[in-house]
Image (tube, rainbow, N blue to C red; front, side, top):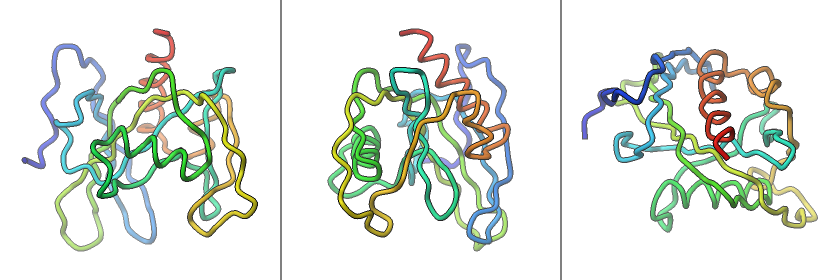
Length: 179
């Protein structure tokens, strides 16, 4: 599979939006791609979800002192990226996603400062919180995280994803408006 950005179709009117992000001492270039076919965004190393509650607020979780939306990498038992995100949301914050779950796009991620590696994709899903499992008695390191819901208007300032975060949120709100 090629590492090129997937070709835009006539139905994709949003321009590609890029943001540089510093994470763990490395600089990455995140390019938002409004693609709805995960086969066009390979290799997929990470998935996350914009998860709404009934009041239209969005799930954020606290990890290493920073808020982010839930997600993680695929495991051997995951048959596809949707199964990965369902598992990750439940494993990390004890929230079960249900209702409408849909791929809304993804990020093409390129390391700008580290060893030369091919870019990878970080897929983003729209989801709805349908139930909340009892919280585990203890929060295990890197397993269950503290979480809460924020108004959609506060998501980008909470997670700090700049222009690419705004594009991701717009895609999620578009799906939500169709319900």
